[in-house]
Length: 306
Ligand code: NCD
Image (tube, rainbow, N blue to C red; front, side, top):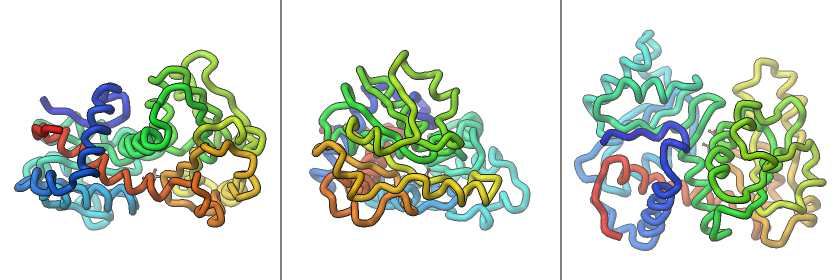
């Protein structure tokens, strides 16, 4: 059956768990998976800049023995000639077996998926909306360090208005028992109401003070102020350094709190924090490739024995 991953709720928590198990197995024995995608092609369609997501998807496909076609810049695709997104994707469907796409417009991945007859679409970020494969990466990291998804207090700090990784992560974590969210942002960048409305009664609080919240957290998810989504440059400059996590603030945190960040980082985490054993954001980026390998295998419906 043709499946897409446009937002986290497209997969059940059981399917997520299958993906984590598969990713764990790939991590343990990568050679076993080295030619599982022989003859398959991934289309990597990036209409917006990316480092980790694009390179981890492309490396994932190569490591599975598949091939990659695509572009990393919308200017070099026929969109620049005025082609519609659906037409581009319908064309790509003739060449590739699976596609990952990032686009500045909210809803772009869903629109593309609706035009597909046989090619699974993976949303690698649609504007300020959703970023489900970053969520899989985040969850795999949480699972590794915390061994559970329930009974956790998670602080989400920074740009909660435009941060698509945050929107997706909160939506996914809301499915587990007794998860508490603390939304930490300046007033201008608060979590949008539409996402808060989805949450369980009494499961979140909001503050603009990181120092007051940090000692309650099991997980601190830092994020960059999303410069490219601002209309006013002045407003961006005013808000960009609102939160800076440094060693001083880390002193107040629990000893087993973990710090996640989807990256890229700008100033919101001082580099001095990198050597703190609770800072796991680079490890998080490493997990991203393995979970994407698992996702490609899953969506291509390739049978594997664990
Ligand atoms: C994130 C994104 O693109 O939304 N980056 C990523 O995929 N790791 C976060 C960001 O750009 O701030």
